[in-house]
Amino acid sequence: MIKNYQITDKELLGTNAFVRWGKTLIIFGLLFRNLLIKLILFLLSYIVLKDEKTLFFSSVGNYNFPIWRNEEDFQFKENPKYLAIYSAKKLKEYRTVFHVPNTKLFGKIRDLGIEPTRGFAAFWYMLRAKYLFVDNNNFFNPNASFLIGNFKIVQCWHGTPLKNMGEDKKYNLSWLEKVKKVERPKFDCALSSCLHSTTVYKKLFGNGSVDILELGYPRNDILFDRGFFGTEDVVKTLSLDKFSRTLLYAPTFRRLDKAVNPFDNSFLTKINEALKQNNYVLLVKQHPYAGSINFGEDYSNIADISAKTDDIQELFVNIDVLITDYSACIFDFSLTEKLQLLYPFDMEEYRKDRGDFYFDYCQENLPGLIISDKDGFIQKIEQLELLIEDKSTKDRIREFKNRFNTYTDGNSCERLFQYLKLGDM
Image (cartoon, rainbow, N blue to C red; front, side, top):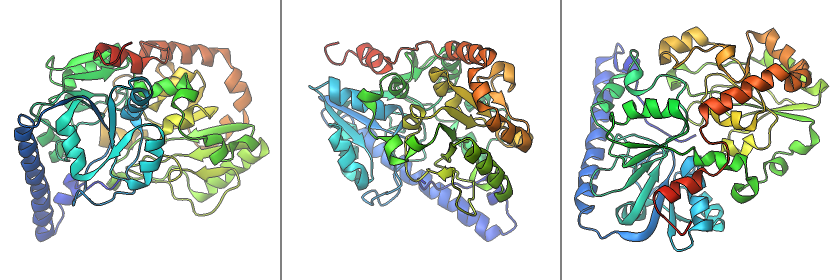
């Protein structure tokens, strides 16, 4: 799990005034530190000469200090990963640099023809690169998404909006989120997957100050060409070939102080028995920022693979059924036209904490079948073959796919690089 220092309003309003003020000082100290780094990089960006043949990529995460420390939980994934792979294979005249402060990943990344970087060298490449490709927006953390100055930043983002975000979150904003709304992003352009995303991002990224490119998400190109982008043999690594069906449970992010467990041990035992009877396996990929499922024992047909694989896209090409709750991965997985099961076990509590959705969370609007309770969960597993072949479900998935994916061809990387006039394509 990537370590990320978070303090909630609830924590800050605790009964111990000394602790409360101490945490507040820490937050302002972190903010001051990052703003100072931002100012230094702003000035240097007009002094350091650009290298027109260097492209810099950075995925979700932030630098913990000291910045030369090895962060072994940092991951290699998301849209910048797939753009970097494409760049290394197709844009041979460019230097493809990926920021990943985890030396354990350096060999894997170099094998793809990509140059990994970390520490002060990463800041140097940020200053030198022709373009910076990022997928987050966090000026509290010193990374390529929080820069201002002489930079060309392409915001790739990391999901089609399902839950209200940015200015659309009307309530339950932490004071940190309120502060973050003061600063506008300084991106040159941002990627979108469909008209719905474009509309949301125009408001989120400055009401017209950022060009929104409705070109599709590069990470989804692997769903159409796993041979070109595939970096890991997930079937072999996880021994999936001995099962007749592979199911994946991938829940959304929940605040660390709101972590809840959807499966108690008795429920997991029942699920495992249903899976075993049908020779199915259930893989569990917990959210990297908020793991909440506690496995009290080992199960023959259930495996928590959160620590074994970073990239959920590589799982998508190898599974038969996706089970989730309110995660935006439903938009990506709809491109496969495979079955989805939705388990909103804590809907009311989640709404109170996170806010509302951009459209009604109901079966008519979603690509999956909604599971209402524990019995329904077991029943869906037992009826899985019938559900996979159900025509009405297939039709609804296809309609959802076309509505929320302007392009369904696996050429999003190529479209972006063509727009930026990079390479001879």
